[in-house]
Amino acid sequence: MQERMKGIIKSTAAPGVEYREDLPIPQIGEDDLLVRVCVTAICGTDQHIYKWNEWAQARIPVPMVFGHEFSGDVVAVGKNVRGFAPGDRVAAETHIPCQQCYQCKTGDQHNCQNMKIIGVHVPGCFADYAVIPQACAWKLADNISYRHGAMLEPMGVAVHGVYSGNVTMQKVVVLGCGPIGVMAVAAAACGGASGVMAADIFDDKLALAREMGADVTVNTKERDLVAAIMDWTDGRGADVIVDYTGHVGLIESAFEGLRKGGRFTFAGLPSKKLSLDLTNAVIYREAQMNGVTGRLMYKTWYQCEALLQSPRVNFDHVIGGVYDLRDYEQAFADIFAGKPGKMLLITEYGRTREAEA
Image (cartoon, rainbow, N blue to C red; front, side, top):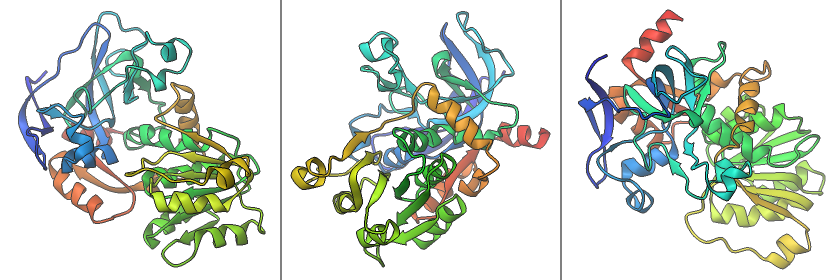
């Protein structure tokens, strides 16, 4: 094995990141897997780290390789690892549970009291190699590509949000048509919703939502969202609204489009405090409200795998671009410019493995 690796590192506490070819290959512990990375995806978290905003400043140790959505091949395992071996194709659960707290011991590992996150608290995957605990490894089915495997983690946020309540024969509204939002559209459509509406302010993202199964799309710059929902539901209101934007104004207004007894799920992270009229928006409406974070370990992963294998939707549509790892600057620039879809980075090893497939 080579002694050094290529990777993208947050080297200083300032905006920007650095591509290096002399990074040390991480060492595994007794319960870890060493994975040779094939494909990795850029997340909103990575954008925060790149820009070095307040969120990143409060959490990210430097220097550190970041990134957390990826797939690759196991090349080494610790002595306590069972069920995984060199040569296995894997993706990674980002959240590292402590396995000791109340949540972990009662089947709620994704909500661990002492959660650590790959690429945030510990080194990540924007590199040739990454280390993950065996508790965070997911073996890829033979018919799932490395590119789709790298999207399982963000897909899980979409699936967990949509399936955190019933959607069968329900009219579902998805707010926000970024990569997670359009995957949520697919989850709702494949999960038996009687109709799916997608809302955004960009027409190209709404077009992608239609490709992923949206029956109706609304550009909220051009049309009032609540009026659109009421027209679509014959004045009753949506059964389910799932927000992936975190946009406070949109969330506050969207409540008026929720039917009495409906469910409102929060998955986007608001940048400021939310103000709701609890009496009218929630209590008199008997609205069900819930927040979601991450993915259920591992129920959501099974659901995502089934969704990827569904003939009803093609997740290649979600891929907005594929870039060599060293071309990360262009990938981030395209994201910041508003290009729709999920941006993937591929290593040299990943190119080789794809050519062999």
